[in-house]
Image (cartoon, rainbow, N blue to C red; front, side):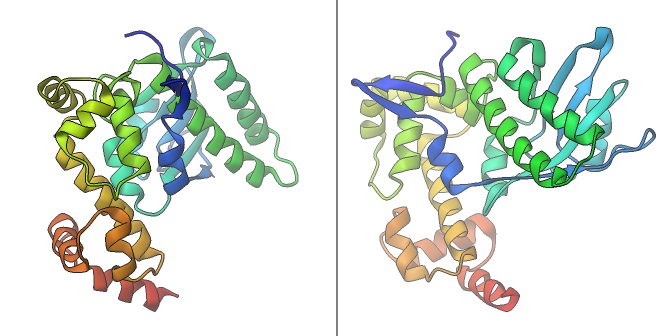
Length: 270
């Protein structure tokens, strides 16, 4: 696959493959401490492997998977480790990402320099170090996602879809305008593909149909809004549902929970 940047030209205008995701689902990072014998729960690592090579490994869907962390880091020196999550309804976005993103730093000089700063802050603690490390980690994760999109190395899931020159246009359209009454034909037109070609390619790359992805994206945004304390009536139209009742039914099917329970839990926690 030809390498693409995270920002492309579309009809003479630039479109950004990642910002509409990251604006809604903020990257949250917290550095973890490690001992020589035990790797604490985490899903983001800077590792030193054989011949002194360093690599980044990110396991988006497993922020607290200790066994997964040990498997990934086995036989390697852990230079830095962190728990990285996507804010709000982060589990929905994490589930859409590939299970494993890995890159050797020699192949990405812009990531290598940032990772070097992170390791330096870990090894040489100074005033404000925790804040610096956490913010650096956020930037590194975003750069890592950008690199994964641009390299085309991920073959299935959201990153693979965003790396596809045609599917990316439809995905960005969905992300930026979820309330629009999208049809298969209109999404195929945005992607510059025939209806059949678009449906087949989308399912193969994304692992679900365009309609399923659109519905899950709308519900993820609704969950984010509910957890922020917004009323159901104001959410339904904003995320593309005909009525609050329609949103409530779809939400319960997807999350096995009534939206009003989310609101109650949010109010109780306040």
